Length: 117
Image (tube, rainbow, N blue to C red):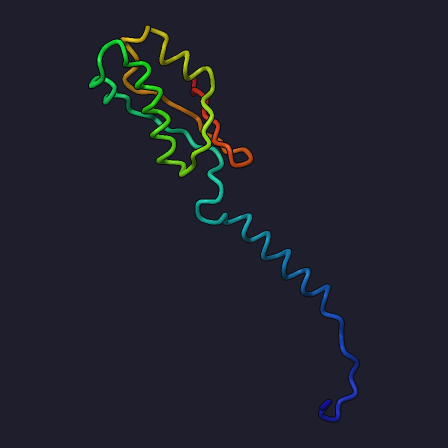
């Protein structure tokens, strides 16, 4: 069933590859929803830490930071840099800061957070 046309069949593999590459580039430019967060800066409020007993406040602050990052990055694999821990524990276990600024980046499905300053 060539309908009277004797045209040779063309090889469309190169055209298909070009279309696939264009689609891949557009997806990388736009980014799919929830796929990659890049780099963000969060100001995490730690006022709820005051509800904990005085001797547990810095421990609770670290837990609040982890909860906040899990909620906002939608990831369970979170790594806190030592600078965050040092800032929270700077004035001891009873007096953590009221808020903290954190830079969050994603590397190979692991969320890394470090102190902004």
